Image 1 (cartoon, rainbow, N blue to C red):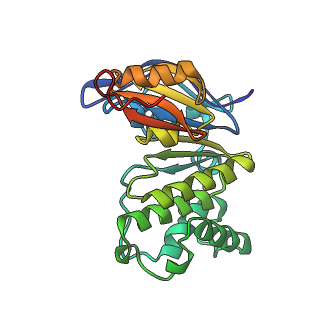
Image 2 (cartoon, rainbow, N blue to C red; image 1 turned 90 degrees about the horizontal axis):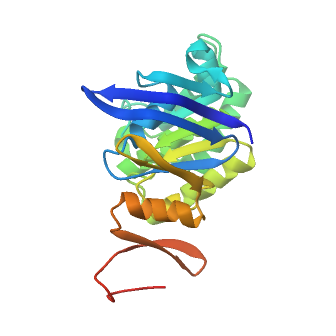
Length: 262
């Protein structure tokens, strides 16, 4: 299976502290990989390094090409980014925010093409933000803005999409909608990499990268017992992962004999 993204001895520092420690990683093309771990594990730092947004040592490769050998245009065409808590100008229209995702496909100062319009419309409808297209971001709630930013990322139609905490501010029904959108992207051959705090949702991913203290401690399929054991371990056995009605659920680990579900 080909690698969409790869790292070799990837290390990075933030504020004088080492946040990534010699990571060797291969992320398969056309699959959904989710990065999980406790706070401070280096999840967001890893995603930013993969996107070329964090200074680092070691190598990052996109489809076998060193990241630093690619032009800005090549990077923009190959990868879309949805960051955590992204700030946007609140007086921008929703339509204009989503259209920003098409900038890599447009010539300088050129008007949007028919394809640009089609892609933005499809993205806004997929994220259920179409009805707000003439409203400004300032008129929307935090969850609604998050859906607009997701539409912007989807409109770029890049072969790889990186998302840091995309479920922030989304209520459970819209989290389910997001999962359906991920599956649609995968059906189109898109590589999806996400950082999630919601372990139950992360367990739906094809592959899971488990991190602790700036290192990858496990990388394997989401339904694999070893992967689930690694997740429980990095959370100091304070959670348990169990199958319930055909779905993986995350339960608090209570005292012996209390609240057990098997």
